[in-house]
Image 1 (tube, rainbow, N blue to C red):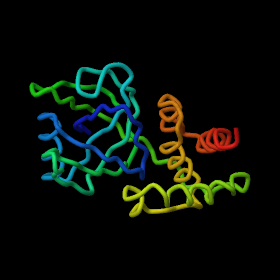
Image 2: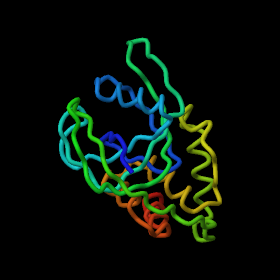
Image 3: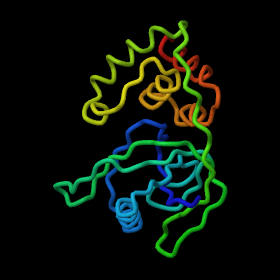
Length: 187
């Protein structure tokens, strides 16, 4: 499977929102094509480099599907995308316009697992925080009994290092991510 790639200084998790303001021609074209063809684009965390220039990325990212768009008062295109599925980047090719396109393999979804009793305090904390996060989260499907969903929401909103967020995205062990979140919240 080939997808357009959007390297960013953020980690997108499945089910999580991603607001973007688009100004580079290559990404304006990419967003237009994604909207026309109703296809996702791939979001990868930058290892080295910058969002507006050349960069190298991590190999595991998340597909993003555009759910809303608008033209800002400054003329820039704004979009909201939602993470859908994790993927592994197999190879990349840089097009003439500077857009990177990657061959990817989809990673299996983390199995749905009921939130273990030892983490029973987390849904209440998360619910109170999400309610204060505004528009991005108001239409988000809420699954407070799903261990992966709770772990991903905390990992995306906690003020932790991007490398730690990336480690949660890459992990197949949702309990490891929940232990990490619990440790951060209780230290």
